[in-house]
Image (tube, rainbow, N blue to C red; front, side, top):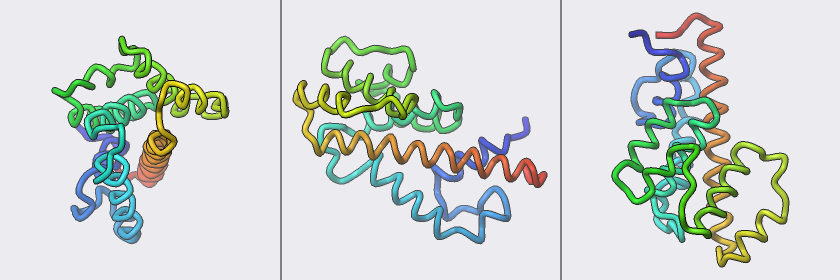
Length: 167
């Protein structure tokens, strides 16, 4: 089966950027993609994960990617969460039993899918259940990176398809 441009770009962006890019035009901007991969590592597998273990971050990344029409990144990040205590979180309709986790998931979903509706009240809800400010920032960083990665993948795939460069 022929790989779509979105699949090729998404997996390349999230994978080893030293590999040959799926489209020739991407080779000229290799430096940007190296930095993109560094940012990915910084938000998904940081040395200091704070309150958010790597598997939880991967589950959130999978959930966000799937909700934003990138099943390829969703599956890739879902694999990183598989077998962990957070694997169910990958499913967009999964609601944790724990009340604090419910608030964190609701926040992440809102930031990822209804960004314009996020307000200071949403931050206060997290603070009221004991989430430290630094950990709230970590959640926002993860969401911001995924928004960037998903949009870059989508944009590059659209350009590749328009140029007829798909695999």
